[in-house]
Length: 116
Length: 112
Image 1: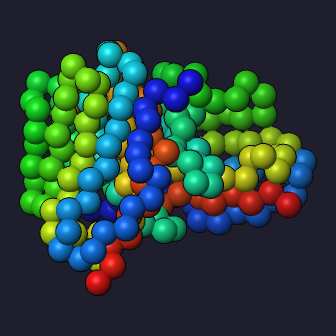
Image 2: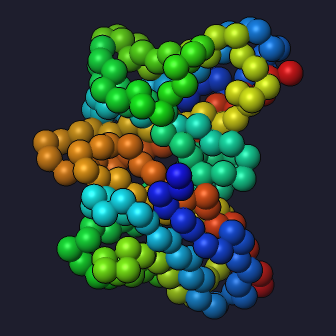
């Protein structure tokens, strides 16, 4: 059973370009979470999505960042007009989200974004 | 506002020793406290988790101790091995929110 998959693993962009990060959840998981990790820091929550719905985007910057999880295909985190401060590791997690309680979140290997 | 404070930032332990990492949380609505282990270049992997209805949970060499009144919890790694060298993150979630709030991490080095 494949785990959470993310691609690309490494992404280099110049300032002003767009970055697209993809996440395929574990089989049977319909809930996806995106986190950002700056060097020497813990992970910071960005957004929580279910298929075709954004449930909680309280951690996502209002400008330039967007996320989607379409009915078919992977979840996408999109960063427009990247700046150097966007350089970080972006992790996706998925959970099965059964009724009640807090499901375990399983993390992917991350995408390391470098903005030149 | 940092809602989960983790210490120490780094830890060096001899092989066979006990590694202890501490966390304190502020949000009294948290009801789920996982610990994640992360190796360089990899994503975090769930190690062990606890809910406030128990004071201790043990899985193999890993034990979580939980003190609800003090809003603190800790990870103990018994018989630490060089393969345990990694960064460990504590986290909390709850109050109807699914987002995990992480501590800043502890870099553990186990030396032979």
